[in-house]
Image 1 (cartoon, rainbow, N blue to C red):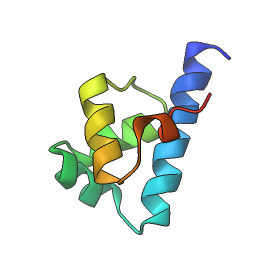
Image 2 (cartoon, rainbow, N blue to C red; image 1 turned 180 degrees about the horizontal axis):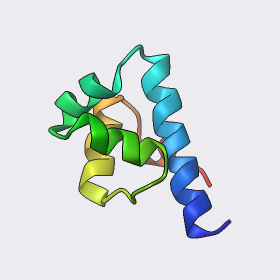
Image 3 (cartoon, rainbow, N blue to C red; image 1 turned 90 degrees about the vertical axis):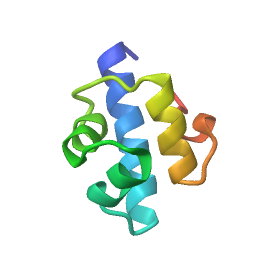
Image 4 (cartoon, helix red, strand yellow; image 1 turned 60 degrees about the vertical axis):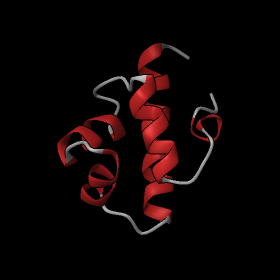
Length: 71
């Protein structure tokens, strides 16, 4: 799996977890101090996720980072 596929897989995992909790991209963005467009770019694999953002996302979704990074 190359880096683009890993980025896409991470974005998919974040989106699925977010949607399963009934959160909008806007609400997740507010929870982590980011923007809706940044969440969209993460979920679509257009940008990489820094460790700080990944930790904030995992905390907001009440999961361990390793649950999102399963590739």
